[in-house]
Length: 415
Length: 218
Image (cartoon, rainbow over all chains, first blue to last red; front, side, top):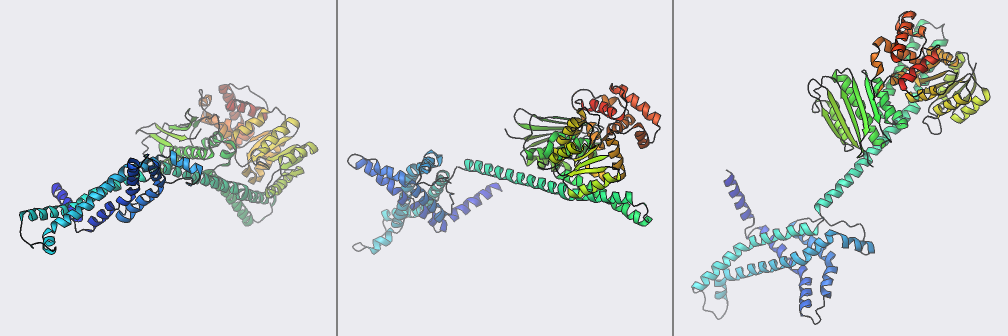
């Protein structure tokens, strides 16, 4: 099966590159078009070797022409083979001094010289040989026609020499497209590697750009959460507290009310208090004020106090980390403790927050529960993983069946 | 009895004035920031200052810092702090300043339960202590390092300890837990013994003793 597939592919490729196919002509055109851009260099070498004084100035002209030649070669690849070589991005224009030094120091510039001085002459040579192959093939294959058509000859008489010439011509015509395909492949490959930007470096730059923009988005989201928290705290919550207090005052100062009215006031009072409670927990989930004002230690002791099981809390931080990292750390501990309360059936839990020597904020949440926490199954753990991943953090979950469970999270927090 | 109020939300301030008047206080001054509060305390020498923690210009802990100054400069004025969230170190800081006057630290939403709040106002103005149950819960969070003496307490003793730290009297604790006052006294003696605390008279010193043990700093 496999060998027949390979055979089919080979036949398909051969057919696609056969002398009568469009590919043959494209490759030929591409390869032949390698000749003109190499002419300035050829001329330069010629002058260097033959002119009196052997001046290298013509070669320096080729160096100066390099940007133009690069553009020419990129156009050749795109218009004839449809291969797009992205331009090398420069920060400064060529005309300025900084632009000049930037180009001299960039390895992309030297790769381009490599193409213009080494590959381009070879490609031009190949192009020349190819054109010659087509021409000689065409002439030889039609030798009988020539001998018949040209005046002063005896006409179509069969000779052994002419038979050989016709056969050789036919072979050359058959071989030329594949030769063109080979040359085209080699040349375009070299052009892609030498004229375009360095792919590894390009990727590195894109990763840097992406990391930067992601950090920006995270910071913006965090800022927005804090703004909403402020608005709720200073606006809605204060109003609700005032409302609940007024209802409380009404309850306390109006003893002579009919019982229905009193019941309504009681109900409203209770609901106002519940609304305050709900709003508080909502705000805590967003970004608690205590985190912003007083940092992780204070905010975490609040979470620990609200947990339905005893929590031992140790926070050892010499300085406050970045607000975004702080918010993620708060979320992680809050979510981890909620998970412990929901699933672990633990009797105690400990939270350890430290900053390691290499600027990593390490959070460790350990419980003595039943274990078996599966990061693939629980939505809580998936949410944790996403939030931790958003700041390039790591999460490790060690939870054998029967317990205990340890969740370790490391968040990079910069220098 | 005279009182001053520092609260930047006008809506709340109006309500607080009403509640203070219901509790039998005469509101000598209402202010919206810490500086005006200190000036008002200086001028009126009130028995009670009701102070919001988050106030202009910084909106962080201006109220706490003002309360500390009041305790140092005007030892006859009791301070009741209201806060949107509780941070146990504020309470520890406040109790660390030696003063005969009462001290309280409550979540803002506690003002909705007017009767209880009035009771708290009177207790604090009378030299007592009132800590929000959430503050106490945070104080009971065990900090890492070293063995934990709280382990030695029974669950009931922990409940009693929490209520003591809030500033409740034996009668208050007995009512809350629906036990007799002598049972409460027995629990308290046992707690003091287990935690190595000196037995002290009076609610405020009791709270101090508990806090000294819980936090270690005052």
